[in-house]
Amino acid sequence: MRASLEHLAERAAAEGLLDVAYATADSPFGPLLLATTPKGLVKVGLPNYDSEETLEDLAARISPRVMEAPVRLDDARRQLDLYFEGRLHEFDLPLDWQLSKGFRRRALRAIDRIPYGRTRNYTDIARSAGNERAVRAAGTACGSNPIPIVVPCHRVLRSSGGLGGYGGGLPMKEALLRMEGVGIR
Amino acid sequence: MISLPPFQTLLDDHAADVMAVLRGAVGRVDAEDCFQETFLAALRAYPKLHDDSNLRGWLLTIAHRKAIDHHRANGRRALPIADPDEIAGVTTEPELDEGIWALVGALPPKQRAAVALRYACDLPHAEIAAALGCSPDAARRSLHEGIKRLRKELA
Image (tube, rainbow over all chains, first blue to last red; front, side, top):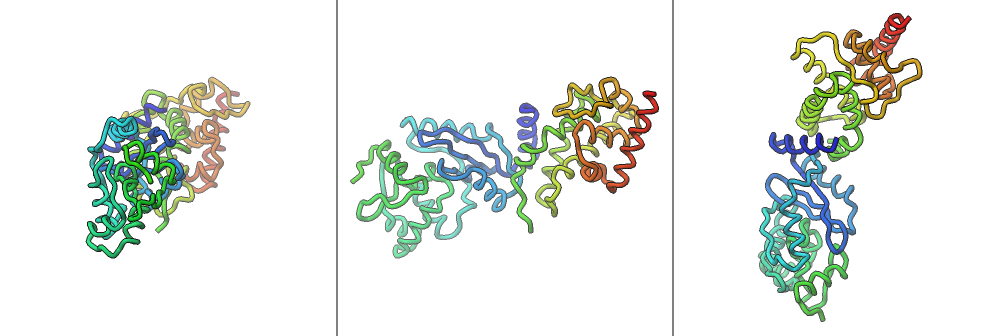
């Protein structure tokens, strides 16, 4: 049965019938849910989120043609493994931004450009997204990041140097920053 | 618009039954092809589905059509029915034992499908009806006729 299902996923992808492929990946923080469209990685579900709810949300917002297809996420999984081992500093993965619109998307694209081991504050992000005064909205954009870790919203801190927030929980944010060699106040 | 569940949940819940029905209808070897065709057709139609109240019946209907297509393509009339041991999750009733599946395979298509769905997949009449695209009464009749014929053959 497993071989039949794997074969089905590949045939569906070849015929353009697999709109969202997903798989789970191990991380030091627990299992991650990875989802990709034909365009690129569209979602990373952190360990503290319910995978079933996330998949239902993807079905409603993108397409109900959602299937488990680990092969489609081999590259993302491999790069994440290397990142967690400290051996990869920059992800080279196509991304699908469709879950974010307008200001949020611009803010997330700015976050995507923050280099490994460096940080920015919410004001920097607001400015890069085209509205310096929208600091709170920049915070919301970080909080709504559908592709955390790969789009490194953990590198965004408060202007005061405080940690700010993180969807995966503050201990995870702190651990990611320490792993990247960032000193936390 | 209704929000449909992720297609994977249909596979998790019903793929094994669809495979069992197809093995019963076309045999183990050809079931794999029909299985792929069934789920590819289902994927094609899925986003436009208006009613998700009986996804199992919907899938079995498609499987049934694919099995019929398969037999038409092969120009066969008598259908092989898989050995019951090969059918996953078999729930045969006492009076329907081993050698009988050969006889089931010789039944007319509707009766054969009704018997296979009832005894290989343990479907209630309403779901057999959905799978065959007929009324529950008609499904009951096909099943009844099929059983009657089998009894006669065995007598």
